[in-house]
Amino acid sequence: MFEILPLNARRELEGLRREMDRLWESFFGKGVLEPVESWVPALDVTETKDNLVVKAELPGIDPKDVEISLSGNVLTIKGEKKQEKEEKDENYHLVERRYGSFMRSIRLPVEVQEDKIEASYKNGILKVILPKSEKAKKKEIKIKVE
Image (cartoon, rainbow, N blue to C red):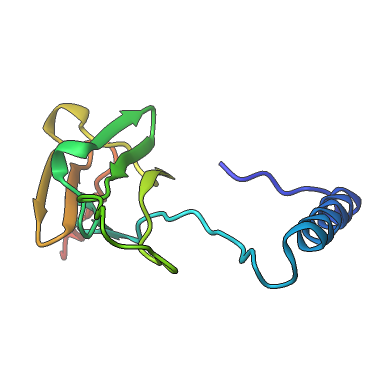
């Protein structure tokens, strides 16, 4: 997943980023290039007695352009948000909608039954239900009263 860099490596990367920003600004002018953030869908991961439930916000994305996979205990959701159509008679000065590929991977906290995973899509929300394995379900122990 994410690797934490040592402080000196982070400082070197930050210095390199500042130098590249300065170089771009000297060429294009200050403020012309805004930082571009890649888009990734927001996720909710909840746990019930029997399931893990993952919900991903995928507004404007066709479910046919989404792929879900499970490798070990890592769930990956990836896909592509495509631009609807190109307007020939319009000149854009600013477009804030994001298009392109995305990928989210999360490590599941418990084992799941891979063959019983279900996914549905409604109103821009992808819902993945991952049934827990019997081993992962909490067992209640009843106390006998004598």
